[in-house]
Each structure stands twice: as structure tokens, then as C-alpha cells.
Image (cartoon, rainbow, N blue to C red; front, side):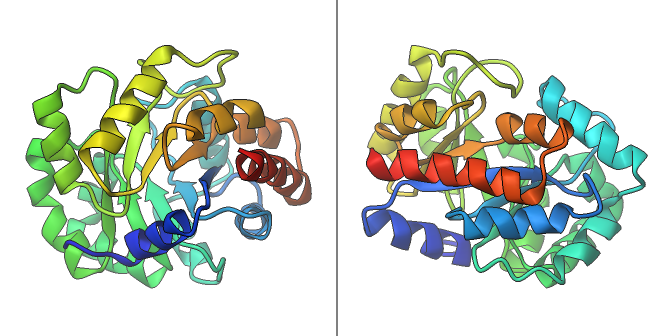
Length: 260
């Protein structure tokens, strides 16, 4: 599937001179979590990543793990999250992030159809190797879901080229080695990877993992098309931030990206 609604949306905004902002929310974390989605959109998000909690999140750092565990303790599950999203008209694409075991257990065809019906435009399955993506891809394609691939600083050039060719919607660049989480500083490897990706693909290149402050976001976006902000927002959420307060934080990231 060479073209997707997610890609068209992000490409259009990027080509209009805008740096892309993709904030993250853990689905099911609090009864008002869908209001967080709406607040993100109102604050200037270009797309929103919705995490579907899984009991063994191998790439999630301590903050996202804590958020996922809290959401699971509050009784959420895949079905509840997708049902809730059916009632959300955010006005920007929604990208579901979860682990392949959860999708496999639900059934690829069923998950793809239900996700599309829940206003989801793309999926990120970080533990699904590129070599095995063909098992999932026909179902995602049939439902109109963009399957986003992740690239890390250790991805060699030949693999990076294939990964970019296979990615849909955007390419997700991992700023640093290891799991997600807030960082006081981002490694130089983030800039190097962003430049490598931009030299390899015309897909939107969005960098994530470890972006904690608006200033960091602006610095990373200098070499990419945009950023994902996750742990910094979910730390505030776990500390009791309301949808309005989280929206204000996203607005601060938006303002920093717009200033450049």
C-alpha cells in the first residue's frame, strides 16, 4: 500500500512547512483519557499515538510501563480502548502502538477491521521484525492502516533502505538505544540517524524516545520532520495532570516547534 491517509495528512503538513508533533497517550489511563486525545488535537498535534497496554512491553521504559500497568489495573483492554475511540473525532490521524502478541491473539484480520472502525489510521508494532511483517501487512493494507516501521541508530544502511521502502505513513526514528523514557540530554546518534533517514526516504521522518522538553523537540526536529513525545506527557498524567494541563504541555511543544 504505497499511499495511506496517514501519509497524505503528514506529508501535506510537512510540505506546507510545518514541523510534525505526535504526542502519546496510554489508552485507558483514567476515565477521561479520550479527553486527553481531544486536548492533544486542540493543542496542535499533527497525529496522536495511542498506546494499547500490554503486560510485557519490551521496548517501554519505566514511565510508559507504569502508565500501562495503571491502565490495566483500571480494567482497560484492547476492546475497551477501540470502543472508546469510536466516539472520538480528533480531526487528526490516530496511530495505535501495541505489541504483536496482542494483535495476533485478537486475530490480524479482526484487529485490523476493528481498529479501522475505531478511527485508527496507522499501527506501530515495535516487536514485529521487518522480516515477519508480511504475515500482518495484507490485513493492515486491506483495512487502510499504515504500518509504521522503526529505525534505530544501529540499523545498517542496507537495512535502512529496505525499512524505509516498507514503512507506511512515516518512518519512526529511535533517538537512542534502549527503552523509552525521559532524558536530560539526547545523544548525537539522534542527529546522525535523522540525517540518514532524510537522505534515504521522502516519507515523513519523525523522531521519538527520550524527548522531554520543548527545547529538545525543536533541536531534534531541526534534522527531521517532527517528533513523538511520550514519557514526558505520561509522567505528568501519572502525577495527576488533567486533559487541560496535558493540552497546555503539548501547546508548549507546538510553540517551540513553530519557533524552530
